[in-house]
Length: 333
Ligand SMILES: *[C@@H]1O[C@H](CO)[C@@H](O)[C@H](O)[C@H]1NC(C)=O
Ligand SMILES: *[C@@H]1O[C@H](CO)[C@@H](O)[C@H](O)[C@H]1NC(C)=O
Ligand SMILES: *[C@@H]1O[C@H](CO)[C@@H](O)[C@H](O)[C@H]1NC(C)=O
Image 1 (cartoon, protein in one colour):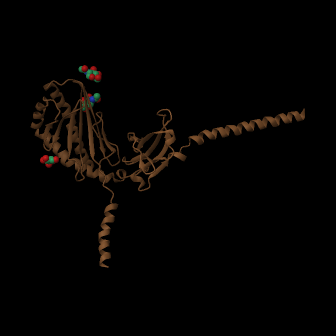
Image 2: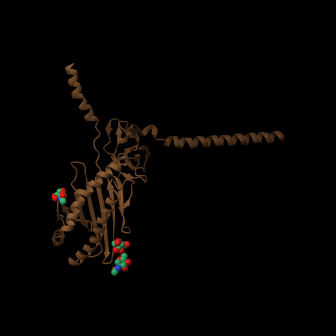
Image 3: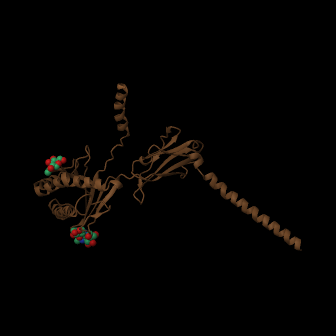
């Protein structure tokens, strides 16, 4: 009895432990692009994502940050949101001003492209808050802890800029407040308000086709997987239990409705395609993997035979009809 109880006590956490779904991560990332075409023409546009869902958009033409989800305000009150937005407007206009000053100070040449990537995560063990700046596509500087530091590969002249930036205590404190407090608070609210959207599971559809022949006597087998969410997916060409190392994965591409599409191909000798199959694993399917066999599913033979058969029936019909008509005419003649 004691032994049974022990087994039960030992076993239960094991079962619960293994059934636990690994926690998905939803990093919050903002990207902002600043284009300075000349000393009088500039614009900036921003985008933000939570995990793989786009949540906000901020066009140069608007004072307000656009919501791309019904839950984009998270759990902030309208007043809290307005105060954050106000802070970001101040930040936007000071960057416009500062960059033009720097451009004169260290003789930067137009056109200039500046990219900012910033973000935070609230789940434990994730990246600390970050704020990185790139200039003409190369890393330039970042905000670390409580000060600005140059990127390792940045040109030496950047030190002048770093010095000036580090003297501006107001901006540094605002940035720390945004990264250390406001951002995690916003993200916690987004995770709560957007839970249904973030944790939705949409099952993939899968189908096979043949691609353009890679050469004489060879076939390109194509496995299409579409309409799934979230993004992580495993698709592999298999022979029995064996993964086919020649499998080529395409990029996971977005569908218009927020789901994903993936194309996975295998180049094989025409005679060796018969017992191959495409295996699809996705969180929405649980343990019910999709397995599509090349043989049987591949309908090209059927597609060729069907029109031929239809054509023959039609031909026979026409012949019989004409024959009978001729008989009829002969009869009345
Ligand atoms: C600045 O660039 C804009 C957009 O290309 C152009 O229309 C404008 O004439 C330019 N202004 C000057 C002063 O070069
Ligand atoms: C972008 O916004 C700034 C500040 O509101 C404005 O000065 C600038 O003219 C705008 N740029 C364009 C191309 O509309
Ligand atoms: C913000 O966090 C960084 C570490 O990520 C720390 O060095 C800094 O002192 C914090 N600032 C404030 C104002 O809490």
